[in-house]
Length: 305
Image (cartoon, rainbow, N blue to C red; front, side, top):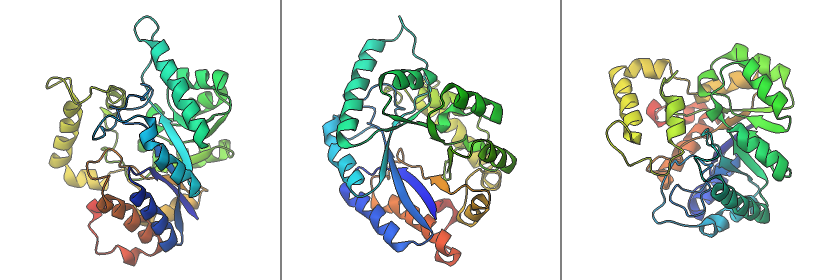
């Protein structure tokens, strides 16, 4: 069976939609949900990526019932502390961030969550020393590109449970086969539907920029739109190259990964404007039903995926 992680929806009704998808598909199941507080939450620690705003600033308790419900329905729940930002004493108010982190981790522990997806090695070391009961899951935002890099990080932090390789490695089967053989006890989860262009030269910079809660503010060159507009213009100019050379993993390709022992995949989309609607969750449903039988989606536009 193929196991998928997906963003935790912002409404209980949409979590129920995930359960319906699982009941209606045979070869695949959504087994894990991931989440981080929105950038305008008063409880956001600063160690998250500021991917989205919520309608009104809400604290952890607003989202707590959704986390509890997800866990009660059997989903693994992972909190994202996946900022690649480096924190510097004397420049950042680290004590404030750590106070918020302590409050957050205790809140997560109280609802039954002990899994965090991380990127910054500083945070990995801090968590291992101060919160050893929390599992480390490695984020794709590291953007490592070779086995030596992953080998070194696994050696430095020997309690990493799984990792999401860089999106650019999705079609590098030589890499995937070798690292799967070298680290058989560390689960590989591949991100299937990332919208970024292949080998995007702005991706690392955009990841770092996305840690700032003020990312929608600024001037022409110093705002989130700078990155988005550059990529969109590239896609519009080279649309068929974007489609044909994308690292997106389509439904008919999943079986090739299973052949080398990779059966875990990640669905993205929590920062899309319509993620909070049933229409967006329908895309996930179509993807999983396409794995069951390609005929289920043969009349669906490829842009859906």
